[in-house]
Length: 164
Image (cartoon, rainbow, N blue to C red; front, top):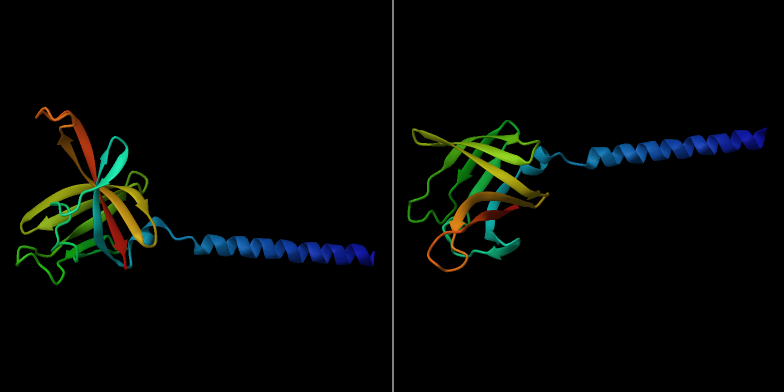
């Protein structure tokens, strides 16, 4: 009887250990909102998706040299803000603010941006999101794939941002 009691105690302790460690893993996993908020994001590159391949688009309108130091923040309360960095494009960049919310089962960031008296909406489908990197689709543009001067395809444009 003593062996059975000892075996039962060992099994009980082992099951408590399994339950405790599995609960710890659940607590450590961050939500998509937690991954997005609480840090500043800066654009590190722009890419075009052409025939399923990602091609870097350096020095484009999407990532100008003077906008690369801008800080983008999202708060848990739903506020969005983009602040010009030290290089403000000779005064052409101003602060941009608005609100954000998840859309499409947390697959898209829906922005409502206030620019002076104007307000505009922008949906950013999220390709990937981690502690340190956010990759979003920011545009779809017409493209001439065969060089005949006529746009015959659409190319998706993505920004990769680094979280700090």
